[in-house]
Image (cartoon, rainbow, N blue to C red; front, side, top):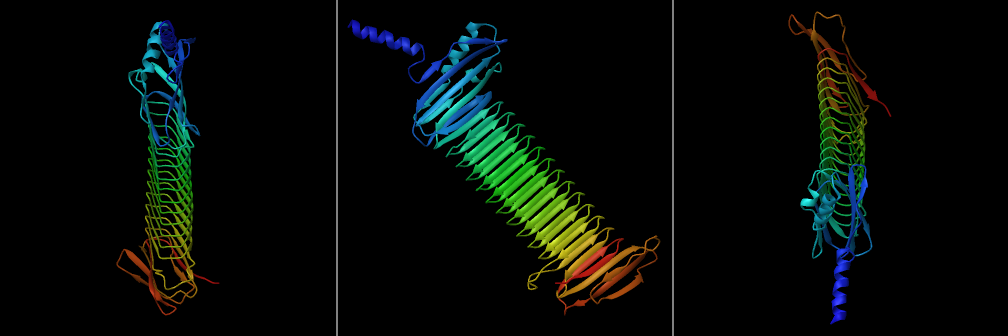
Length: 420
């Protein structure tokens, strides 16, 4: 009987020290005006479980390991006056760690205090799901085969080697995601976003930061309130919207659709169609294998190695375009309009087409405009009325075909042959 009583006393002593049930709380210490304490807990779990962290404040680092355990080390810094108050807060924190089957939950009143800042270092099994909600602080997760759902009030988020769907957001921090296998949704109130090596659909938005997307195998949707966008080596369709930043896209294996409130657009090597609009910036596009449709409020447009139809409208900029199409059975109509710039169009020497070119300008101008063509066209000049004069060039080339229509309100038009 005495032996059993001694065992019970020993058990209670160990439990009080936090050495049973996978938990241990270290002694409090003073660092400046802060009281600092640490909690270490280990939970036995199986793969496929869940880690849920709610309403925290502080940094969180999660890594995968081969053990069927969730190991948590929390460092808690408290802006509090007395040691007794700090001890009470630590004791309350202990109740915020709960295991329910294969789910580990961290949260509760002890983590909601504005005067408490935590920092977590956590290890979970490789096959595990993470759902993290933080009011502020950085978050990093690496090596997980499971879903990642996370939000923070303003810290940075870093994810690496995630084999599962990703849905994350931060109130204003930067986001960096590397090597994901499934769909990614990432939002930040104003920070930069960088996504590299993604196999799934990518959907990114930021209130004003820059966005970089590299090497993806599915569709990419990008939106920023005003930052620049850079996209490289994509295997699906790309859609970009920015309130005013520059857009730079290279090696897109799919259709590309971009919009900016006024920034420059630079595009290289698109296997699909290219559609773009900008409130006033210039557009430079080379290597477009599909059709091309562009609208700008006033910037210059420079197009090269286009292998499909061309539709361009600008409020006043110059337009230069070179078509390198070889399969003339493909739709190759051209419609270029500018409110006042020059048009310079180069066409394959044997392209079958019907050309209609027109310069319409006020008669009382100091400029002398002209239409020049390497192809045989009929060129006429007439006074439309007392205010406007019109220069026209018309004719079929190589037997006629798709319509090529060029119009400007005050610049020269040059039509050139692209010889082999």
